[in-house]
Length: 320
Image 1 (tube, rainbow, N blue to C red):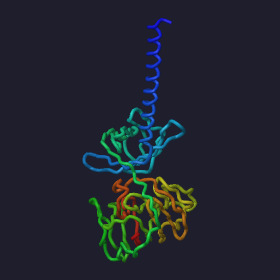
Image 2 (cartoon, one colour):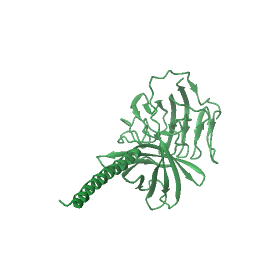
Image 3 (cartoon, helix red, strand yellow):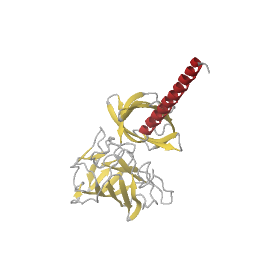
């Protein structure tokens, strides 16, 4: 063989091998980036200076398709059929739920160091920036030691609570904490991490409320028929995430109770003496959360903007 031809073929083989190695490394790098997106993210959207909490979970479906769930400033967790990912950037769309407008939400983002950031275009065509951090696991290595029970409602007035907004409709009538109409939510001054919570409440026919744990995870209070098929958005569900085993409601205009134990992300809910959710994980924040800082203590927050609701007992036993 011609000496120069042999040398040329040798160089070509070497170059081809190197190219294959580089290509394989590039593919591996891209796959690694996709892995970096998989997981749960606590997101804050900047709506012209107003910080609105949001949440995203990205999962691998099969061997190559990314799917997920998304929680906006309101509503429940919405499934994401496909998360498009290319060279560190991603995007997906979701239809509107309770929001106005007639177009899909468009979420675009990119990996940014240990976090993610991007933009969201709403169903009304408004565009906002957002940033996200990895959501904490909140795993507990030991069972909690419980402290003393605290009555958050004293039966006399609104001491220990605040009402954000202009419609301050909450009042105490005959020892009952009362919201006679839709208006402001009610938020405890004290903040908590892990706890046992006992609440006794009464709603009118067709009314709707909720109790937010740490101000981020709503346990639904709603006039759901006892024979309704259980759902995460009906009575005693963790809104959009966890479905109770049954609708154990006794109906409107009757006093009912929730006993809720929250340890890390694990929640147990007992309704009128029946356990309907047993030590299940709450994946992330629900719509209407005060913030997305899941690793921090948070208040007890009662929804007051969905109709009349009354409470006669709110007792919390925090972990030491």
